[in-house]
Image 1 (spheres, rainbow, N blue to C red):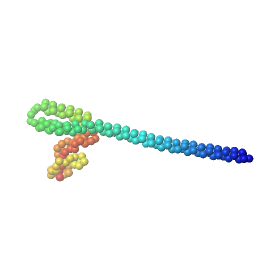
Image 2: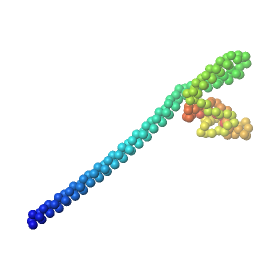
Image 3: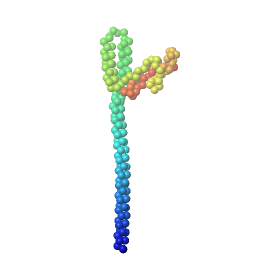
Image 4: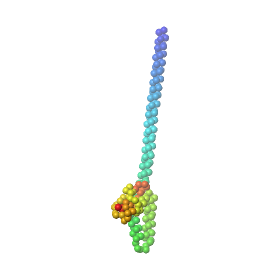
Length: 177
């Protein structure tokens, strides 16, 4: 009987060891699953962060290409103003020299078309338009010649220009008070 009791006890101990071993295996398996889930979550977050980074750099690169010529365009704006003044003076001249006017207009149009292809556009402002602080730069105010021109643009001193969607020079205007 002593042997039977010892063998039953040893069987029970073996069963307990097997149960403990199975429990440990389950907890190790569960622990591995948790670690795998955490690593998978880290990977997905890192992947999403990298995708956002790629999209942001593409947007920044596109914006850079759109405004890469901004410095050059800003330097050319006074030259465009001089062309406008020269054309006005040639038109005012009493000479019958239409060839000179046609030649200067041709060069002016060619220059403006080339700049327009690179994204430069004129901000259209006319006498009589409402003055808007966000769109115009007021140089001075003068008494309005009529009541309907109060708070409106009386004269455009310099045209405004945009490069793409960005304003690189606001129109400089005189407004009536």
